[in-house]
Each structure stands twice: as structure tokens, then as C-alpha cells.
Image 1: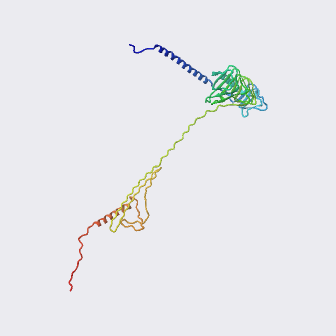
Image 2: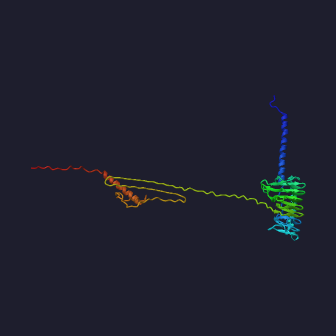
Length: 379
């Protein structure tokens, strides 16, 4: 007799399905890890001695528009000459062969930064298609030829991370056409955006560009362009036409402060009151009326700091001896409870009352004799 029936076909089906699912999960996890690893490969570029510069060239630096200067918020330097139309009030200015030694370390730092950007692991290949009108997250973006921005803004999305780094690398030139621009959002910072290119030509008059340009050769800007970054040329000229260069700096981390507020504790005052009243009255009818009244009041009040006040009440007037009727208008003085005077008065009153009571109860000795009448004879 067979108690169980074995289905070999069903078992084979499950055994074939399980490895397939496992391979799919491994592929998904591997892809996620690979993407995360590539995203993490974008690290900021150390500019070293070149970080204080807004514009640095290997040859001449000029401003082609005599009607208006180019304003740079940062150091400027050229080992040949810096044109009078390039202004940077309040910052260091290295102008010509006499200042060449002063900028030598900065030029070496530009070369080191260029090579550091080149060594980073690629995140994505963007090709030669325009980056205008697109949004990109942190990473390293490569083009095997030129890199173009036109037809709108390239938006850099930091994803809420102020340390997000964006590196763009082109084997050939970077060109920003009229209508193209670069903006940033969601925590991204211009100080963490770098363009490592052969040369750069910014034609987007009246628009904004974001990031530090590390060019192997020349950098040229047309009229009225704002760069939130730096223009650093390793081996050629930097040419302006009435532009603005705003050297960026990363915002300092926001410190979190925890404030503890002390809790006030209030203790309610406690009041205790105890009052005892005792009244004793004795009346004897024998021509004499004696009233003895004793009132005892004990009041205790306790507040914060503990204050105790004994209660004693005295009424001014003319004292009346115990056992003596009070005269009209007379005021009885009640001694303080438990005082010697109070004890003596009570004892005297009790003694008088006892004596009066005994007298009232004493019988009369003998019988009253009737009146005697004398009879006599008349005649």
C-alpha cells in the first residue's frame, strides 16, 4: 500500500525556479552596489594654493570690453600681464614676471587638481548630446569628445547632501551656447562642481555658469556672464568681456545645539488649624448667681518656612472676682488658658458653688413653735 505519492515533475520545476530567482536577486543587488560605488567615487577636488584665486592664467589675462570692467571676487594672476579692465578690489593681484614666483605654487596646484579630477572613477558617459534642460545628481560625468550645454539649464541636484560632488570631464572642449546655463538645487554647492576640459568657451551672455573650470588651454567668456566658481587655465590665456566671477566657498556645517530648560518645582503651603472650645456654666439660686466660662482656642498655621502663632485672646475691662455678679457695663477678663490666674479662678468658683449647694440642702433643726396665746379673765 502506498501512503504517499511522489511527484518528480513538480520537484524538478521548483528546483529550476529557485536558482533563477536567486540569480535575478544577485543581479539587482550587484547593480545597486555598482551604482552606489560609482556615485561614491565622486570626491571633492583639493585646489590647494589655487583655492584663493578667482582667475588664473599661464599667459595673459585680458578684458576685451573697454566700456566696462570684469569684476573678480578673489585673487587674480598672470605671469605675463593682467589687463587693467580686470579688477579684484580687496584681493591679491599677481601681475607680470615680477610676481611670477608668488603664483608658482598656485599654478602647480591647478595642475595637481586637473590630474586629480582625471583620476576619478566615472559614473556615467554623457557623450556629445546637449546637457541643457536636464537634471543630474552627484557623480563623475564623461564625454569622449566635446561637452555641450544649450537649449536650457543644466540643473545639479544635490539630493539634500551639501557635500555632493559633481565632476564633468571632456576630452575636447566645453561650449555653453546662448540660452544655456548651469544652476543647482537641493543642497548642491558651487564649491563642489568641477569642469576638467581641454578648453572652455562660454557664449551664454546674460546667463549663469556654475563650477570651477580646470582647462588645459584657454578659457574665453563673452559679454556679461556670471560664473559662480573659478576660471583656471594651465597653459594659455583667460579672456573676459565685462563679466563677473564669484569665487565660491562651501558653507560650514550647521551645529546642532540642545537646550535643556530646568523644570520649576512648586510646593504648596500646608495649613493646619485645630480649635477646641470648652464652656462650663454653673447656676445656683440662693440670691447669688455664679457664671464661670472658660474658652480655650489653639490655632496653629504652618506655611513655607514654618511659622507657629499661639492664639490668645484678651478682652479689656474691669476684672470681677469669681462668685460676684457682674455689674452692668462690666467686662470680664478671661485669663489665658492654663495660666496660674485661670487655675485659681476655676478653683475658687468650684469651691463657692460647692458651698452654696451644701447650704441649700441643709435641713432645719426642730419644729417651729406655734405662736403662744394668753387667755385671761376679764371682769
